[in-house]
Length: 253
Ligand code: NAP
Image (cartoon, rainbow, N blue to C red; front, side, top):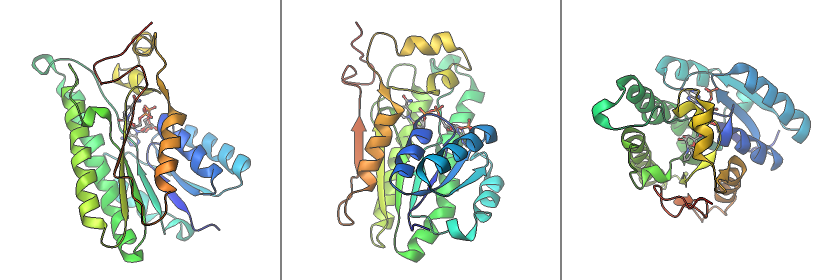
């Protein structure tokens, strides 16, 4: 078995799924996480037959602290020495001003994007320190660099990921464990469908009239970041659609 093992959270859709393909293409064995087991099983079959790699499915909700611990403890021996953690699972839920905000939406974003990422990282970092090797890639967002109108809590959670990305790097460089943040602009995935609670028509409008990024563009960026030589670390990579020069500005035809 190859010694390259990547653990991708949120591999059942979008950027996580595209990253699974990209890493598999380059010989990584994969631990695939998400809540939708059926999706993960279909992806597992496709990856194993297409790329001749080994995979392990780990179904848990990253917001559930105990489930994260149990799930990670059950990784098979052959998958325990994780070389790459892609902290990708995340979401926006709702959009609007704070005075009319849905507090349940806020909790979901804070619990997933900040607390879930921390729970997962807490269980993976010690092994990387012990082995004196590893790379953590955190899916941040342009929303973690600049706040846009009505993005308030989502932006706040991604500012937190930006802070955690920096904090991890400060703590882990000495071992050496690499830490990199990816900061995408608009990528067409299930992201907006989730944000608008299943309203596909409204979600589709977000991507009308311009060439948005594809999940594969971000997977390419992630592979570039993780394939640099040991002495080179990409601290942060901001990847935007050409038509989106800043989060609140999109040039539509
Ligand atoms: P997506 O298509 O909705 O995929 C999100 C993935 O996260 C799914 O696999 C989902 O799987 C998983 N997930 C969500 N909540 C989870 C939980 N509690 N536990 C485990 N898995 C969970 O969205 P995406 O665009 O690929 O987003 C991936 C990351 O990129 C997110 O962190 C997002 O904030 C970031 N990002 C996206 C964009 C964009 O424009 N799309 C831009 C910047 C940053 P299950 O539903 O099966 O659990």
